[in-house]
Image (cartoon, rainbow, N blue to C red; front, side):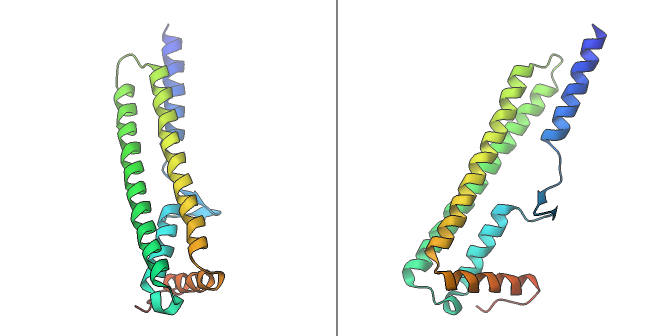
Amino acid sequence: MSGKIIKCAAVTVLVLSFVFGGVSYAGGHCSKMGWEDKVLKKIKVALMNKKELDLSADQYEKLKKMKYDLKKEVITRDAEKDLVYLDIKKEMWKDKIDLDKVDGLIDKKYDIKKAKAKKVAAACAELKQILSKEQYEEMKDLCREEKKGKKCKR
């Protein structure tokens, strides 16, 4: 009986260490900036450099709407994920852990992350559709300049 409890506890600790691991891995190195932050930064740089990119009024309005929609989606999904995390923690503190319920909550957490990633990918694709190829390349150059510590022209 105690052997089953030890095995269950060991499996639970192992699963939780994978589920709640803290390091973000992106592009071969650790990164503090998430994927959604990078897409939002590109949109911000494009909006801040309206004249340099020669954005039309329509392009500018589409970018503003896209930035708002993406930020709203990211905030919503992060909040949903945090709530599911609390539900998982609540279940894990119980004397008798319902693994089926915990498994379902873990699945729900990753479904939320998947939906968020799909929305970010769609925003990235939409950004490339809104801007011309030349505008997109110029925006990337402006992002690189900003990353090097240079200020973007406003």
